Image (cartoon, rainbow, N blue to C red; front, side):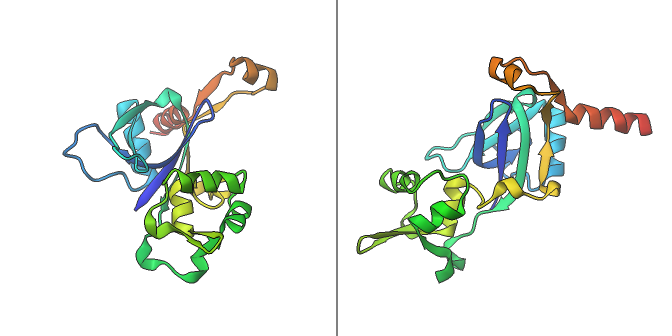
Length: 187
């Protein structure tokens, strides 16, 4: 299953998302690569997405002007490929995932029943979680070190200064527009 991480201009990180080129329900096949994602953003002025961790997922639209970057695609492992080295304690998981602040974050997800039955279990007094469950809920182990080829930058701040960011007065550059205009000049 291919999923993407979407970063908004306000710093919100949305994971795991399936991305679609339109809102039409008959289009069942999600986008599989960043080229298709880029084309859909340019054509529609944004993207349709489904958060696959929601109980009742529905297609939602996010405007191009709200998107900072998209990372992916990432595969979420399934239970059919589970091995012993993909099972870990909460302490090990919290130390490996930079996006997890503490063991309590994982414990709260367990108590809120966010893990599937096969992704978590308690062995005496120790909670064990699977790599697949952690990826599904918290994203890839270290997505901040993602290869540039797996990142679609949509917008970035122009000369960001800390004071301006705090006030929300940052000018953004649409990177897809720049690529479109440079392509037109070369034609």
